Image (cartoon, rainbow, N blue to C red; front, side, top):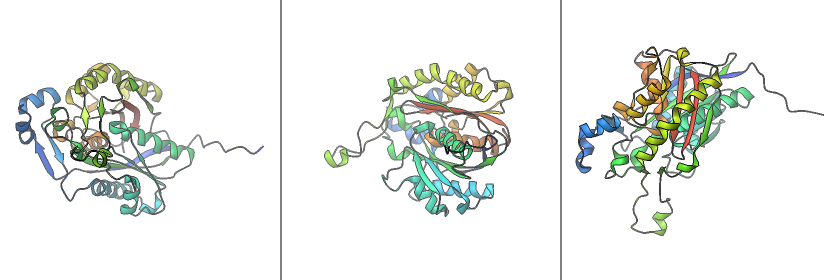
Length: 333
């Protein structure tokens, strides 16, 4: 009997390089709070956010994605035609077709690569990284480009304090290639359907046709519900990722959780009992919550500022609308 070949057990995936794109426009709290009846201090106390970036007319989701991808490819020394697959994580791609991944593949010149979008909201980067790693391990792909990009400002009701104060825009990309040694641990992922509507777009795009005058279907969030869920559930998820990789917090060089809220980041640091030697991503302070892009953008900031180094082990934890989650340990590019 002919059997499907077993994947090479010595083949693994590795992040080779990282690229980031941050919109030019910086939006401080003072620009947003007058319409919401709160103060800069109120925002900082509850979220830790002092500013965020909003994309302008010349910074479409595809523009930002391609810019980040070009940087990652150049840094990795990988030509676009060497890519086997392009994966894009986003919840703000407003075109049903073509996919954001296909658009990015076209723009960077990866004309024969497979292309697919992964919709896992703020956990999208961790989902995509896990899929990319498995594609390489099984031999289905040689080199994979993962792009995580958001224009959250397109879905924000600026009169809604639960979302207008929190989210921002940006994009980041990583290139993965084969490695003879393990570099990305098993991904721990799942969802909690009991809170499926804690972060949602309550009305579909169809309402623009069926309900004239209904207005844009903005994103809505039950901040208190999400906060309570993260406090109780995310630290155990992170610990499962550490256990799956066979490491402890003492082995980590960096902790890069989804940049949802500074208070949540600090609560996770405390719950996991991270030693002071572990660099903690706090990109949320200056760039807000960039959803799927938040983890790779925070990763880029840690590396650029010298707080973390290439080869360090990092614990990545993403969570978002669904409520979906994913976590893994990975070596930094």
